[in-house]
Structures are given as C-alpha cells and as structure tokens.
Length: 295
Image 1: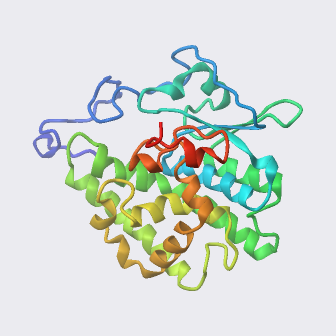
Image 2: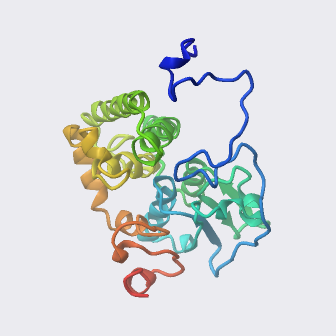
C-alpha cells in the first residue's frame, strides 16, 4: 500500500497517481530507450552471414548463455552449430529496428534465426534458445528422466529468478540515477537468498542437474558465476559477499575454466579488456584475429 504520508515518501511529497503516465527521460542509463509500448521505431534490415545459425545479441548475462552453448556445441564436434553473431547495441536502441522486432517482438536480446529449416525459424528468449539448440543437436540436456527434469527445473528457476538480480539488484545498485536504500536492501536480500538456494543445491551436486553439465549451468553461470567473480554490476559481488558461498565458488570456477565458456563470454562483448571483446563472430579464427585489441 502506498504511504499515505507524502512527506515520508521519496521524493518527498510523492503520491502515486490513480493512473500512471509515462514521463520520457526519467533518468538513468536506460532512460532514452525504455518505453511502455512495443514495436519497431525505425526501419532496419538485419545482416545475414554465411552460416545457418544467425545470432543477434549483446554480451550481457542473457546474451552469453547462447554463445556459450554454441561454442560448447562446436567443441563437442557439431559442425552444424557454426554461427554468425551480430552485435545488437541495446544502449543505442538497435533492438527497436524493424528487422530485430520481426525476430523478437519483445525487443530483447538474444534472438536467433535458424536458416537451415525449410523456412527460417525465429527463436527468442534465452531459455527457449538453449532448449531449441539442445534438442536440435541432442546435447547438453540429460536423457535420464530425473536429470532431464532437474535440468529443466533449474533452467526455469534461473529464468524466473534473474530479473530480481538484474532488473532488481543490478539496476538499483549500479544503473539507477540515485541510490535508494529501500530498493537496494530489498533486492540485495533477494539476490543473497538466491545465492543460498544455489549454494545449498550445489553442496550435493557437481552441476545443477547432478553430475552432468547442462543448459541449466549455461543459463545460471553468466548471472551467478559472473556476479561472484565481480564481472557484472561493478563491485556487486563484493557487496553481496558472493565469495562466501563456497559451493557456488567451486561451481563457478570449474565452469569458468571451460574453453568454450571463455570463448562464449567474449562474443558480442562491449566491456572489459579489449582483448576479451569480440564484437562480431563469424569464424572460429576471429577469437585470434578480430578482438578489439587487434582491430
């Protein structure tokens, strides 16, 4: 319930109106691109490369779930998993171009087009893309009933939980134009609860589905593993004392050392050391020749 004493609200004197209205440019890093309606705002076709799989994304935690999966598939020997990865800069509004909206009407990265099908197949939402690729290549989704179910349990746990870490904790801790104690406390508490859920499960399981590395780990590691490594949201991992969750630490270190994970987290990346940023990926050799320190 809204506080009935406006003097105690923030900003002082604020009362929620009966009907909300949009005020463009309300501050924050995303003020110029967030809006309350869907659809394209400009016409722009998307580029298409030489491979059947075309990925349009950005190296955020949601984005690198898919590039990790694709690099893992290639490492496993699935040559048909070769892909072109095109950069979609959400900070400049690329996701509102007509070509991207045609693939994902929700205007969120990542989005995938599989051109190996009779008609191009559009896949959006990171969890859906992971499941699509797992089924297409029959990989990284356990076949045994219990492990298969556990993989899906934890995949959907991550999909439902991450907004509280990203749009909740990450936004108010790092991106909001002002620090609001109530908001930071609320979402820090939830983020730590999620770390505890993960830590307790990993106390008795090597990976999220048990002994088998799966798409559930690929979905969760970019969020919880990178946060524990202080690689997203500034010093958010230190703020949450993420290194105190020992089982999560063991898990994030093991997965972080996988060569495919190291490659996957570089694709479409726009932050960090230039040697770790591969803005576009069209061939395996690009990791050696086209990172930002080499162009």
